[in-house]
Length: 207
Length: 86
Image (cartoon, rainbow over the protein chains, first blue to last red):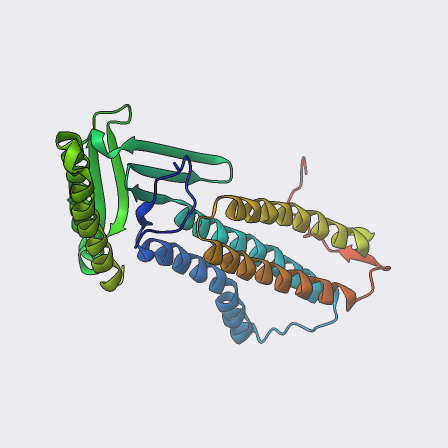
């Protein structure tokens, strides 16, 4: 099924075949570190009160100042967590029936959109490195093109080998269309069917 | 020992909080502007705003619980260990 999403420079007859984000583990790992940092003051306070039998009386200025400091601390962590989420969510790799689009969001005002026609793709490779990546099945997809951006890297995407295969299928479709312009409708139908089958497989395997 | 109006502490925290809230709004706008899936964008923004609301509400409730009209005395550590020329 084509994705009904917005992406930069969308053409009228263009649809997203697949949209990839980094694997969820990448976000969860960052969030987990923040949770530990958030829990640290509580652990320190519990230990301190246990050792010195110190108690915090509500309604005093000291109590209020500690609550304010805590509020600033957790406000900062909350914004940081949302920043991590945005970094994960707004970084997207989109494969359409015509192009590949690589969107990278860095911070608040840094946004890079790189795109290349499928017809200019020369080579697609994938790799998986590390214990966690192997266990959870995510890795990088490298796309060699003949364009200005010579190499696209889809980083830490789920099932990189399937993604590479899907892009190659779509690239073959474009190549067939260029080689056999008269049979384009059948060729398009055949390859889009294959691409959507791959999309279904990716969805079913719980990416 | 330093003596200062207690309200200054409140103003200092309000200023720092305001800076962080401006940052939060900027992040929120970036998320809403560039989010590709409408449902997920609204959901994540909603959770973020809810979290901000809880923190602000907790701070305001605490601020209202004490009087800010008094002066505060902040004790400084003794500097006796510095004995220049003696």
